[in-house]
Image (cartoon, rainbow, N blue to C red; front, side, top):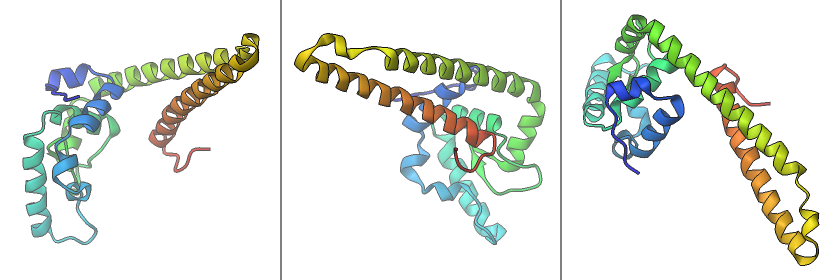
Length: 179
């Protein structure tokens, strides 16, 4: 599925929608090595400037540039004192400046993302509990094994979805590995 997103649409979207759009459509994933968007340790400024200009050029033509920029802002990417990255077509100092100007809006977006994600986590956990408590034994005979297999598949799917959300939340909170 191809996405295209305006800056206004990006600002109104939740994190999951933004990430899905970037994952599915970002031009950078097919044109450049992801490392091209980050300055290497000890890299000379003149070399970085050329790579940075190419990264910005690629971002300029990307249909989900606005979604990528919005994710970068919400993630706190970029520092005012360090020209070491490009994300969503902006350098680190540019991202820091936009984040400062839009601090209130970004705080509200982050709160909404957490609320949405937390609700999704609660809903998945409740569905997992309901699924685990179902008794497939009532089908009897050979059907039992089919019902049990279907239930096991559903439990694994739900547990996997919960794991993905919890791992992402822990990573955003600064945890290196999920417990």
